[in-house]
Image (cartoon, rainbow, N blue to C red; front, side, top):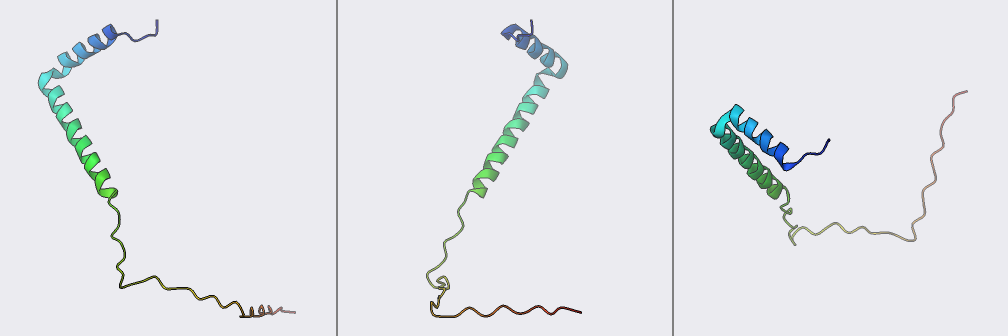
Amino acid sequence: MGGVSIWHWIVVGVIVMLLFGRGKVSELMGDVAKGIKSFKKGMAEDETPPPPQSAATPADPKIIDAQATPSAPAKAETKA
């Protein structure tokens, strides 16, 4: 009880075939296949890497001055 055997699936398959007919089931499977192909195509387009930066535009180097003194924090004005 509660288990699903192969005979249950066969009965369900026969009922589906009787309700929808062979033509509807084959159309449905074709639509599912088209959907899967579209999904795979969309996933493949997303995985394309961005084009690399050209050598003509190098990244801006950051210069760190070790002898620079930090500026004094600004004093906040208070209202009396």
